[in-house]
Amino acid sequence: MLLILGRSGTGKDTVAKYIKKHYHKKILKSYTDRPRRFTSEDTHIFLDTNELETIKGRICETEINGYTYFATKIQIATNDVYVIDPVGLHTLLQNMPDMKFDILYLMTDYETRKDRAIRRSNDNYDAREQSEAWQFTQFENDLEKGYIDYPNIKNIYKISNNGSMQELEKELAKIFG
Image (tube, rainbow, N blue to C red; front, top):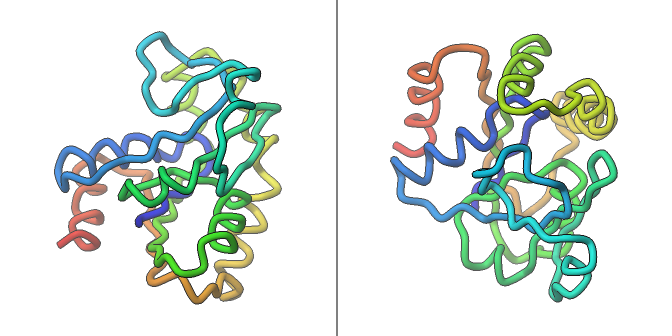
């Protein structure tokens, strides 16, 4: 399974949709009680808090900006790609020690991330950025120092996503062949 990580606005959902379309991979849609950013948003399974509490078999869970996100063991076993944050990653790797994972970390400069996030919704980007900053800063520091060392990680790919879609496609082709 490929795990896609990146701060808000780095293009995680765009990359996941591209991989689905061009490499025919199944994308895991995690559960969340976050409201949709726009009416047709289909990146998660959107439930209210009471409905969320009825879902069994959670294997990894995180909270961003006061909203819960999680996936179940069945979802992990039946999909190819999962957009996840560092807290969820840590829990997933601990709870699924026999499953192998590749990590794709998307890096994008602050102004590009903010511009993308504002264009996709009217949310307060700075609040989202602040809410998740600690975990991504820690993750980036751990990556730089080589501390991300779980036996169930096969590969870690880092891609800069500041450029065009064509540049991103070339980087993804290096991973998927």
